[in-house]
Amino acid sequence: MFYQLCVALSVLVVGLVGHAESRFTAEQGKVLYDNYCQTCHGEDMVNPGTVSYDLRKFPEGSKARFLASVSNGKNGMPSWKSVVTPEDMERLWLYVLTRGQ
Image (cartoon, rainbow, N blue to C red; front, side):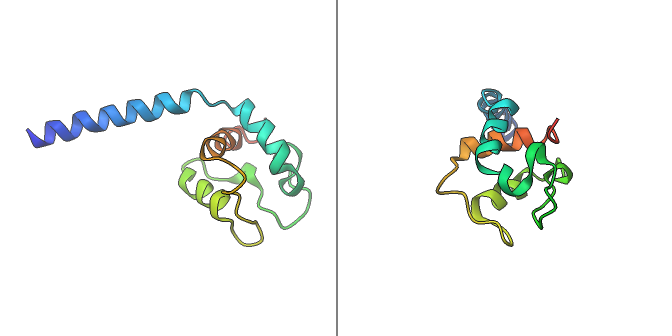
């Protein structure tokens, strides 16, 4: 019984998360990227030759790492959590997954 309840709750949570993310688009993420990220990470994620990370190489399975880096900053990148909402970070992630295409 407990196992069945856990499975049912997991299915519900995954469904809700999938539904919430479906309202976000990569196109929305590109607009945010152009406003906040392009200066350092380059137009269409083509690194301008700086020390910034080449986002086209960001591992697809590393969403949590991406969100943590944007939120908390990493190396020379500042924290963006006071500027970019969690929802907008999700949109940025969808754009990063396009590899700038």
